[in-house]
Length: 595
Image (cartoon, rainbow, N blue to C red; front, top):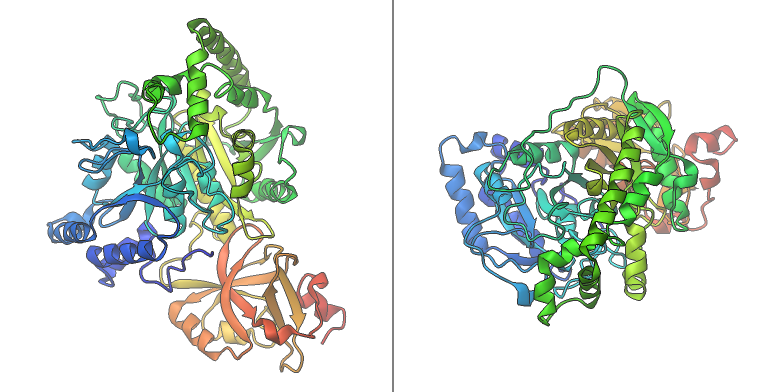
């Protein structure tokens, strides 16, 4: 399974791409809705959705929106989105992934109303771990949502369907919820952005509670700019929500350099996953390009706080939410979910107060650490598991996944999960920046720097400007090599030199003039030197048309997680060709006398 190529299948579904298509006349909202439902129909074997709206009804809504005077100026005009099925939509059943719990609300959640008022088009309701209890995406009677990159692996939860719908380019963005990491873990596992706002900033009116005092509505998107735009629409005080925060996020960066805390190496746990450990090391090294100061910090207070979420009295809050429903012997309750929630019935009021006192101590200890830093860099998760592994050990492995997420709402932090590279088997790795409450906009600034650094254009985001295409070259098109003029003659500009993810092999192709290498994907491969060039779409199309077999253009993964078009070679052409991967690149091979 590979991500959907937006260029191959119609209008790109990032918010900026959708609205650019509308502005140019390339597409209408009705066209995009049709495209979205077609994409969904092609992947119905993956149970991403619990319920879809009627296609004709959404198309009619899109046409009505387009005909409304001034609608095109709305911040989310014609943008398709989904919501997790523990968030109410008027007239659609809310199941929380439990059929016997299902009810049909007369009123939508506040967050849904805000998005639709901003011009967004609701497509449907997404799958989840039942009652938002789990970080795995496997605890749903509607089916196990599979990872967007490898169907044998978990998607992460509990907001599984929302994350995969975005990762598979079925919608531009989606809402999830986040109590213990449900809005961040699936983002990390599916190579997208996950925004967990300050607790109480977004209304939770019309959301089925998990732990009501901790619950947050979260945002999944393809890039930071899209998440920030949706955030701006939802950052509205709701006086009807008793737990809403009557303060807006507005803390900007200090005038000095930002100070980013990084866990002390001894405090990190990757559960035997050497690839995630390596990729986090790469992420820490990348901080140097963000113009920030870094310092090692003790994360023990954070980890200890997180352990109280399920091994302390806060699990009783889950029982307060749906425990009486489960206690009545309701049908269709996942046995693991039942076990977790029923445990909450055994905590006493005295246990709760003891837990509160311990949490106060840990908050004070964490506050002392925050005096030395503005944000904290964490792995989003320490590893990822196969579906079969989770089925064999559902509770213990789920606990591992929450190591870097469970404490965040307990300690009143905001978080932004970001893509940060790929393992050699092609599975994504993610990092999360954390900041104190109401510093959400600082996180967006950091996220934009992170994306910009990855793309070689600080502050511009990971995607090239509209109408421009990035291409990774690996051999005769490199700077100074014989075919580089094919790029410069087309007005291409060099973005940066970097390396691929270590999942390729490089071969010296025989009888090519001038000499050329062939790059082939191989999960047991190496990181290979490349250059990334940028050109307009017309020039790119002209270049592609001139490329002779056995070379072709595919999608390459960079070591830091960027995905760009790039030169690949048909596998049959490298049979018997010298494997030169150990040189690390074509130039190094030539320097050693290769021809």
